[in-house]
Every structure is written in structure tokens, then in C-alpha cells.
Image (cartoon, rainbow, N blue to C red; front, side, top):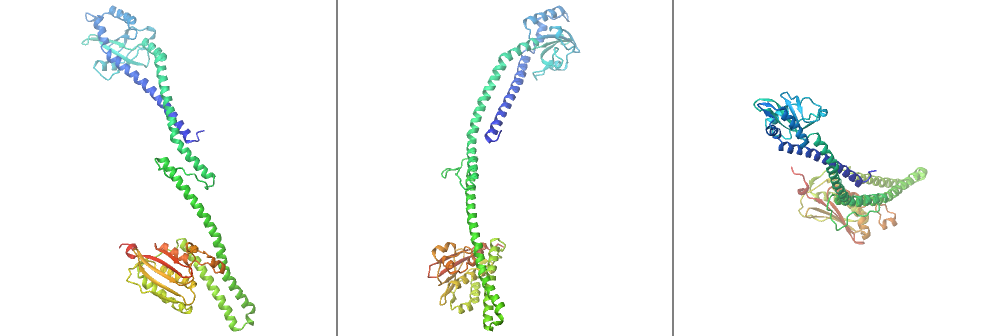
Length: 495
């Protein structure tokens, strides 16, 4: 039944207002009752003493019984709201002005009477009501015949049974109806205003809930923004809506990325299968030929077949190693162990490693003399791997007679290492994807050349080392790869 926030808040508000109304009725009735008792007792506290003095109830030091009976009779006629009782020193009722059939007590407690005579100001001070077994009422009392020689007490109940009857009739006929209607109207108006205010406050939550439901029903595709672009959040509801907009946008972006990654995964599986199948099929073909016709082949032909199979096996092993290396980098299983070192020395060692290959391919491999450079802070092994991948890539795309040049320069926050070749260059449409794993340019797809992951590995390594890598290329004029290592003084931990 109470399924919406507005319904729950409205029900809570109704319960709250009803509770407030009941509490108000109880508190106001009780407070009014005690207030009237206090005022009545304070106003008539000398009533009993005045009765004794004005009505000559004491004659020759004793109570005048005839005058007492006359006083009872007159006050029952003149002021029926009070009741007069004559008590002895133990509180026993000796005489009274009330109807004999309605007096239910024989004794009255003297404790409140003595407190009254001692001048207690904690009004209302309530005494026993002789017409009730457990009721109490405001009173006035005085010792008789004198305070010095008391023989008893004149006990006056200020609000007798007649007063209670009339008061009950008046309350039921006027006061209670007026108070009840006043409370009902006040609470009704307050409840109506409260419901309107709650509706105004919850309508934005209702709209946000509807937008979230629509977004869910659309399978997280269609999103209608909660906040306009020019509107700023003003309260918690708007901030919740802004958070929902950001979350919805993030979810949509994630879904798009998942779709792209799923498509890329399918392409990668197909590409990896093709790249691995090619050397594997070639190797198996030559090995099967050796097995079937090995005895009929001459030694030179057997060595040629064996060499081709070995090269294909090495090619296959290298591709598998690269795949495992890329997977390890993507899973963050490989963590760099950084230390300060001189980048120029590392570059010089790598260049020396490729001298023989450069001579075999008749490619000029050189290194420009570096200036004085500060130490960098990186993993030596991973940095060497980046440098080797870039040089391997340069050898792959540079023909005989070309040149590969390495150089180092100082930048604001690091040292830049550049690998420049005079190869075929990269088409502009391929540049944004050059570091994507298994990306194939149009040239590679038509030539059947496999798509490697060397540049993707270099990119992942530089990201792990908080460095960067970039490429510049012009088709037909070669390519320039540059990666920047952070300075030791910037990233090296303080001792």
C-alpha cells in the first residue's frame, strides 16, 4: 500500500499530527484542570476561617452547633459549589453540608490539611474528597474553635459534586466541542499544508526515480539527463540527480568500451590464431617433408629445411613470449624496480648489441653524442626492453642503405631518448593506433605481414614507469619514436 516515498511520508505526517493533537488535548485538559484548581484554592484559601468568623460558629470557646447547621443550610442554597465538613482532631467527619447518601468516607487525611495550615504555597494542594473513595480536590481548612485550642477542623471542599456536574455539562456542550473543532481544524490545515509541502519536495525524487527506471528499461542505452547543463545542484536531491547523470554517462561509456573491447577481442583472437598458425604450419610442413623425404634429400637440402623450420620455431617462440609479456604487463604482474642510472650508458650498450645486425642488413646504426644529462629514475631492464623494441621496429621497416639514429636530449622533467629511422614511414590514419596490440595497417593486411605487439609492450612499460612515449612520422621519410624517462631528482624516494 505504502509503496512510494510520498505515501510513506504522508502517512508519517498524519500519524504525527494525530499524535500531536491527542497530546495537545491531554496536556491542555490537564493543565487547565490544575490551573483552575490552583487559582480557586489561592483565591479561597481564607474561606474556612472567614466562615468561622462571619457566621459566629464559635461561642464561648465552643462550636455553636445551631449556627453550624444554619451555615450548612445557607451555603447549600447560596453556593452549592462548595461542601463544608466538620472534622475532629483525627480527621473523622462529624458533620457536613452534603447529601448524607453520597458521603463515602468516614475520615479525611490530615497530612494535606496540616501542610495547608503551615502555609504551603505549593498550590494546588489537594485533600481527600469525602464523596469519593480515592478522589482528591482543592480545599480550605481552619482549626475550630480556635487555633490555640483546636477541637477539630472546618474542612471546605471548594469544588463539590454540584460544581463537577455543572462543569461536565458545560465542557461537553461548549468547551469540548469548541476545543475539539479548533484542534481538528488546526490539525487539518496543518496536515493539508504539510502534504502539499511534501509533494513539492518529493516530486523531484519522483522524477529522478522515473528517469532511473527508464534508463534501466532501456537496457542502459537511453539516458535523459536529470540536470540541465547550465543548472547547478542546489540541494541533496539535485546532487543525487547529478550523481545519477554522471553514473549513467559512465555506464554508457563503459558499455561502449566493453563493446569495443569485445570486438577487439574477437579480432585479436583471429589475428593471434593467424599469426601463430602461419609459422606453425610452415614449420610443420618442412618437418613433415624431412620425415617423408629426408633419406632422399642431399645434405644441403636437409640443412635448408631444418634451418627454415628452426627460424619458424624461433619466430613462433618470440610471438608467444611477446603475448605472455603483454598479458603480464596488462595484468600488472610485472612491476618496475626503479633506480637511478645514466641513460646514455644504457643506450650505448644497446647500440653495440645491434652493430652486427646493422652490418648484415647494411643499415647505418649510430648514436649522436649526448650532452651532459642528469640521472633518470626507471627500471633498467624494462627500459632496455623498450629501446630494443623500438630498434627492432626500425630494423623491420628500414631497407638496406638506410639509417637508424639514436639521440638523447634533456627536457623539463626528464630525459628524452629518440629512435629515428629512414624507413617507409607510417600513414597518418595509422598513427593513433600504432601502439594498439595487433593493430594492422592497410599495408600489413595486404602484404600478409603479422601484427606484432612490440610497440604495445613499449607503451605499457612506459606507463608503468610514469613516463611517456610518442611517435612522429611522414610516409616515405621514416619515423621518429621518442620516449621520456623521469628524472631521478623528481621521483626518487627521499632517504
